[in-house]
Length: 439
Image (cartoon, rainbow, N blue to C red; front, side, top):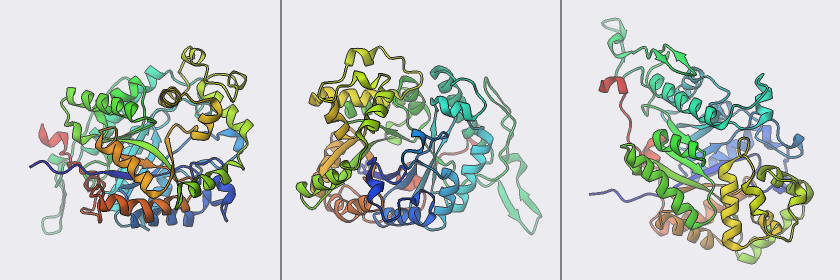
């Protein structure tokens, strides 16, 4: 009998919340460097039985420090949160462009051991020129090079995580045998970007390998995700666009011999919740009053690759001009999702800015309306779940956990309790065997 498909929900912790001005309503607006703030978020997420807490990252300061950004290094924060949670999965982002695979393999395997198997790595390629300058590079590697490096990077990670077979650690006090050398393997990787001997210097982790996440929506990102990812974080704003992306990734995975049910498609969703729709709109309006709209427009234009003067607020996007922009140092997924939404609803620039220029679908309304959106996307195969973006933490997440999650549970869509201990259990993913044990 085929197991019933299960909805997956994470909370996406980006700075102090998804709304650009929400932080101005917090009692502690400097909470980006306060561990207690993140502990509170993690505790709320675990109370709601969410799959995981997801930490995004950037390796350059954005916006000249005009607003809160992701400040703490995510694997350090993840490790600190591990001690204050028992079941919640913990996902941290790291760049394959500006890291070495051995260090990341060791770091994530270490935390996977310390958490009993609750860790995932979100591998990203970094296109930001300011990031390149922080790593002694005069230019950003082009997109093809970034994705070629990422593909090899992930291959080395898997080899290192598999370099100890299950059961290789004996720790037999009677015989004095600590490990079985026949089940510990040097990887002898020789590639275009990396030459790594291995093996990793710690045993296989509790879930075999940390879960691997991918977040790109370009052609290179889709290829990498279909070949390697356990889950894909994506920006989709319409059901139709979500269905196309979902079918594309699942089809690519199937063509590569993978079970498409073992790769989860998780778009971002940005709910703003009130007891009534009017209350939800009033909550958003209160935060909107605090936005620097001139700065918001400038940032929006920069991401689209056009000038702010090209974006009159009460006119549609200049589609032809945007189509001509080279995408080497911009997010193709963001642009595609923005254009899909604008065309689908015939939106002006002002309306797009109001809808959330972070390119994740925004739902302003009651808990039932948010639950309806989640259910529709899930049942219509536009998503396997969502990366939930709170408008401002912790209240935005508390609204989801206290009011939306119970509705999804009553509808039989979401768990009432954790049924396993590892993140692979939460994601309903099989535990992979070591590729060396199979050889």
